[in-house]
Length: 239
Ligand code: BEZ
Image 1 (cartoon, rainbow, N blue to C red):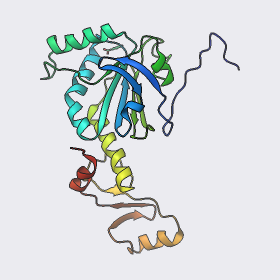
Image 2 (cartoon, helix red, strand yellow):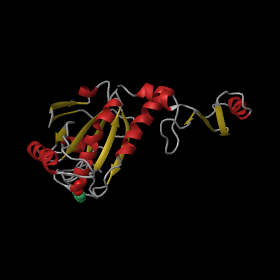
Image 3 (cartoon, rainbow, N blue to C red):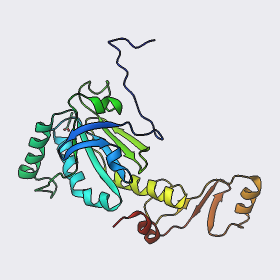
Image 4 (tube, protein in one colour):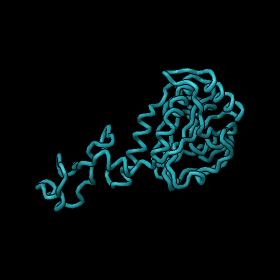
């Protein structure tokens, strides 16, 4: 069916796509995305609205962890379908009035995009009709230094994100790139990593015969190796 005026086409980027480009106004000035972030990892994340409790808890948590993400070579960029003055007022309120779980006087220094026109939210498929037609769900896009989308996670409006998991995602993606490995369930730096499955019957046999040094094979298709935490962190931390 051809789209008509009532049926608006909302694009949904996918893992491996180039991050859709946009220019926007933010709480830290104008932004040309992803060009301004070339050479850095970025987490672009949306939230439903300013002055809402779950979002406030998320912003305080993310702002508190920003240095840790930056040290892993990752910048943070937020977005909601609100105007710049609302953003500014909300961030001032957070700093001046809100105390939560030991966090207080929290200054949000990463940019928060004004998206009252929904230009960016539509490009990134951040609005889900099942949740709301005017509020962005809690979308997370992890974008690599070449501007490629590497991870997408969506949460509904009612569910605050787990920021330890987002940090783990950044570390795991960078480790997979640096060491040409994959990371198993619940992987954390220092845990064993997974090597590519055997690509031939000969290699499968060699692995099962223990001829490939340093591997521990549960079966021919499932082999792990040690990768110590210091080696990982030295490669992926920028500071
Ligand atoms: C919140 O961030 O608290 C929230 C936003 C939209 C709907 C429900 C909760």
